[in-house]
Image (cartoon, rainbow, N blue to C red):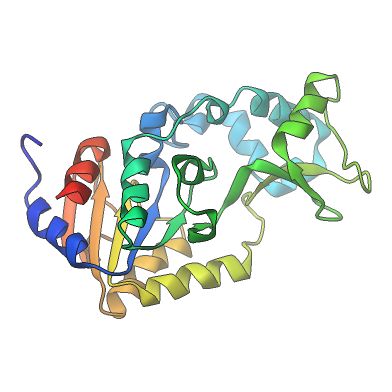
Length: 253
């Protein structure tokens, strides 16, 4: 690539020599697929503050009108038409070459699996929008089935098993993370020899702790992002610029 960031070649050499790469991804890896981030200039919550209100579990559970608006928003979310981009394909390439230990993703879009990563290697710390879960009985079903009910006229579709409140199987603000999922994210971070953080500002905890955990375990830390992050001080290689340009050059070398 032209005007490659300083440090790209040695970072690529680290990856080429690695045996256990953990890739930590945030919203930045999916923006080139047409999925906006949340708080950026064109972010979902910037343009629609009501959507941020619906992301709070207390608001969602207590107000049927918020739930109805949330279901309408889910009908036409860009996730349903988004395709994996070159960044996702780079992560698949690492797996095909036998270097990928795991993907720890903050994203709920399912694009790593759609690109071809083994679902068993993808740790979705904030859940997935592609499934629903009942708040009362935990019944879990494909999101498309519930969206069909919304299109048929159910504005706030209840659980088919117990009649409880349905939501996407994602972690809302105020909702507890799944301990087993976080434990696994930390475990793979302890085990890796390269931590490649892509498209995340690394400000959301506990997942941001993956970076210092990996560093403490002796791994090289490579950060690729469009702007500085909260964990830049841990980076052995800090590559700031367009992810769609940097990541392919980094992985292909």
